[in-house]
Length: 231
Image (cartoon, rainbow, N blue to C red; front, side, top):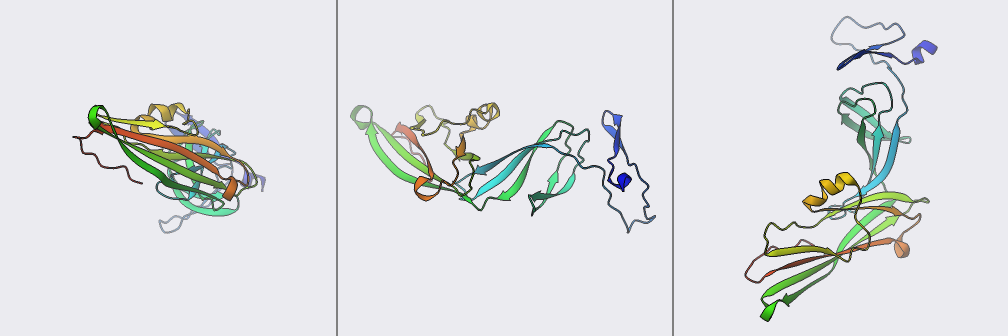
């Protein structure tokens, strides 16, 4: 039994590795039969959080950032995903080297929701003799957490990016600061993606739910036709 539970030894360098299994295996000599055997059981570091994109769905999803802390290279292929005792489904993993991190989706959190709405849209004239037009869009996201513990969540939305110097677009009255994550700032923020990293208090539902608010201001000359922002 001890041999059956033992982990394989990893031997090799560079891109070629051998997994030496410390037990005898009987493998059928035909292409119609195959066997499955355990190579190792490893513990990895993981950071579990929630992700929501309420402009697309009110559902909140569970994600985990996992670091391969073993000496094994995780080979590409299909993997069965469990969250606790719940079977989530199958996913495909690419090659993961030792100490490399990767993201796993763990399904929908049924005890959380994120509802987005346009609460105000106001257009006014600006400039000399009303030569310009300015529209203010006010948005709100209501975040519910039915868990008995605080939950970390990443909220995503978007704002348009102007490619015309005569059109100015600004983010105003943001009730919570945008994410300070360096990767987000260097990539997604420049593309007009808004991301908030928040911690929701336990049992924050209904009257005590967290309300995330922000405004988008679009200013332009009246001679310029633009498409209104979607609600």
